[in-house]
Image (cartoon, rainbow, N blue to C red):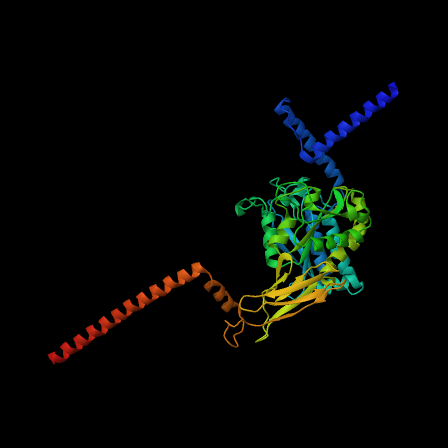
Length: 482
């Protein structure tokens, strides 16, 4: 009996100790109000210093920021035919945020979908930056040799940002140089936060500008600390931990399962069914990059937790790459191997129209590109959809499709409404004028401009009239003088 009580006491002690460590891990150190604060600060500083030293040891074998830049430039040097490199901005410390584009026509605007990978969002989760260089080099080595590599290079504009947070990496901490968690720094749909542009971090601003410029169809950010494919929404309106589906929940579940199913062991997770999770159901976050991409960028993004260990020993990186390689390739290829794609034209002159594509019953719209009018709409296979194309000044066109396992091409030809003049063709400048004219404030301003122009005309006319009348009287005086 005494032995039983002793065992029970040990079990309870270990359980309490584990609970304490768990609380520290998720919430950080807590101040009880009893411990001397100067002592606590000194202790915390020592703890952080030991943690930094530990991570410094683990970082051996990982690329430094300087190594990463050299690796990116070396990659481009040997694969310049199918790549270009560029910087989307700089970190707080001024480190360039280098990106790689891989395509058979890099830098050229084409009627193709674009996909992006982002690594190292959190400074202490560096596995993604290593894997993304592996991915770039694998595509370079296997283009025109491997069918999947060739499919991706020929049909997708793939953009890779190995490190979003180089400062956090060098400091061996989660946040950036200002100690801000970059995955909480985006504007949020539920709460007024991060709305002040001047308060956002330079890394966040760079990502937002990049997304608005490039028109990505889909993307994924690579994280560490778990093994799961996470999809929107990341938060809830009432801050509860519960499943909160976005309008394209079916499509996101399909994408998440595609990644998990191709992974070596993600789909066999004991914690997450099928190795996927809705973000809010796992734990809600606000100001995340994933939701912002979907709402404001027209981009379907997953948050991929690719390693249980945030900072595994460098000798395990090759194995982790092998575990994730097929999943990464399949996810990029999905933007051309699934969903509905096409272009939109005018019936009267055949010009490309940057119309919008909507799906009946799904409150989310995808806009075609401005110049080429191509659209790429991800949809879950096995369902029937009514696809609608809309454009101001044109009649709505819709058609019903049944999505199989393969992608579908669906072009639209829109007819002008009766309010359009016969044979009037779309052009961007005229449409912008029409949009401005339809704005009530613009109409008032235009009326004032017209009134002022008319008054100016009258004044000018009167000045001219007086001028000629004066000249006439001078001539008459001169004549009489003669």
